[in-house]
Image (cartoon, rainbow, N blue to C red; front, side):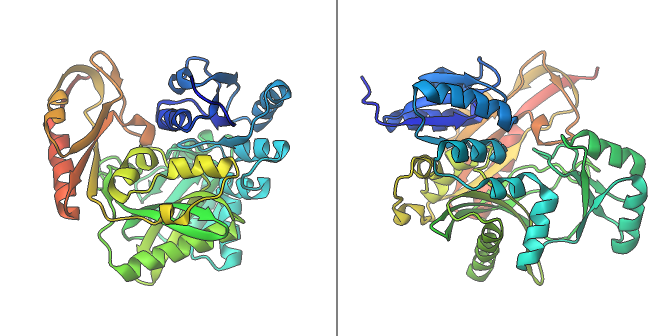
Length: 409
């Protein structure tokens, strides 16, 4: 029988939240899960559940306040779920640790975020809000092709496009707007350079970056104008000066957002003049980065630290300092669109000692859509290596072993 000391609320009950539920139970916590679906996979591990849309702060707060009348909640958190305003609203209303509602609003509104960065001197690409295809033409005249258009409040790369001379601007604007809950659209100058993803914990004003990952966009032309990432490798193959520059700009961005205690996920691009911040999310990453990849390769368990922070516990900062344990390469599966007829080679990946994790999201008989955003990936493989190059090559090799045959619809 578990000894229950504190009640932790986790916003979101999806498959990528499962590890947080498992860890919270291991830590002896009474676990409350929140999701709009009572059948969400992680909710099976919860001691109790709250059914409400995680993307609706008001609905979630109403349900949480009703629950809290009988069972006091001691902390609230999320991971792999871009709902900073929901978490902050609940934390503020219950007087729990968490980022402010003002900071959460910046994280949920890309235009406000970039404006805050600009005021604070954090380097960002040129940006502006647009209200029509005609506005796109003006941005292109000012900056030249290519430019990036995106929903102001989008998630998972939905509605994000790289615009070049051949793209219909009226369609592009409508597509981005349709993927925005608020119907607002922004554009930014497309900057050439290597892109990096960062995962950091801000604690008492100090930013501890556990990992800098190098992102792989080898398929960007194939699936254009959609911007599709095909994995990457961590930690990035960069020198100490570049690493410090990226860490410093992430810390400055977090400060500009008013985040003194909390997790931040950065999208960074390196230029000859230094790193630029594309955006910063006030949460832990999806894609099993914080739950699997970083603990394995860097020795930092950011999920555990986030649980402790949500409960107001003191953190041991030594546990936030990363080690160089191994390298990890990641690749996704992108079969041809159609109905899956056969899958070969996937189970054989288990026989490779350097494959650390693999997953398929679809099976025989399911429909593969043409990838328009990151949610359309069919699966992935993680591969360990002693060097950046070895991990990258092993991930490529493992992905090539998986043959997913489809029949056109």
